[in-house]
Image 1: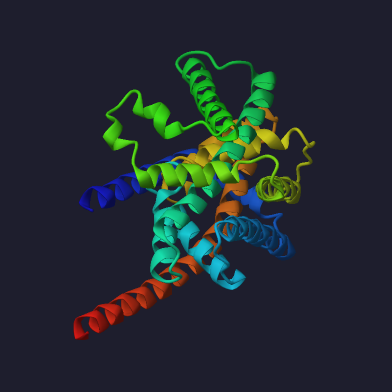
Image 2: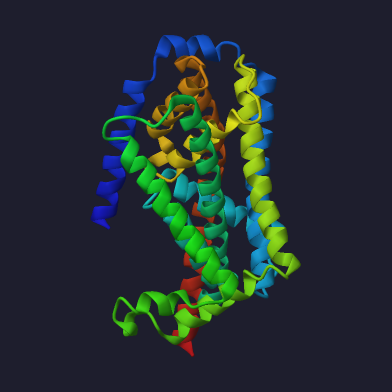
Length: 334
């Protein structure tokens, strides 16, 4: 626990230092001055839509697993999970909130641990893999404008993208062919750590979902792409509100660097988002001051929902503790 707290504090301090270093406050105030009240409303509505689609996607995956939860409960749990992943990230993909959602599914809604894990693996895998596609598209556009970076940045960047792409292609091929991934990795490690009943059952449930002939698969994939489209629309409109017009393809570098910053475990993408968008805006010939205003407004909208999610988290936590305590008392009395 101490290591996790220390990691959070170090990442928070590092993000704050990056944020202070990168932002040109004079340019930031100048860019922000043209942002009005109704602009805020539009950005908040698009951010809410982004979360609603994400929760809807997860609800359908859970329903496919045989568990129908109320839309209101799913949205609250999804938002609570987001708040933990956004404010207290542990690793790529926001593991903190994902673990919490799995725990609440089991303890409050009595969804078996295996079924909850399957729904979360499917949801996160689709989210990260589509995010990777956006990153690839954005980097291709970025490199077409700026060329391959020289020095110690270009080679690791290209190698990292190639490795990640190859890994996700490998996983999708395995999923669609229903070939065991657990068995594949068991060839290189001790089989007792990989091949067991639970792991194979989880894998089989994932295979059952990744079946191209099933309409449910394409419905969930469609919602995953729709959520990314809303993120792109929010980015495009926000840049437009800040006084710049971008073409359709020009928004991809901004989205790419957004996802790259999102996958770095720093609270609220503090500092990392500013650095990433400075590169993105620079590739598009847009002044750096707009990048700072862009990230601050985007972060402000997401923080609002993160704080709402945090309130939900505390309420759910209190309810869970009371429920578990009551069950323990009942068991003891019996």
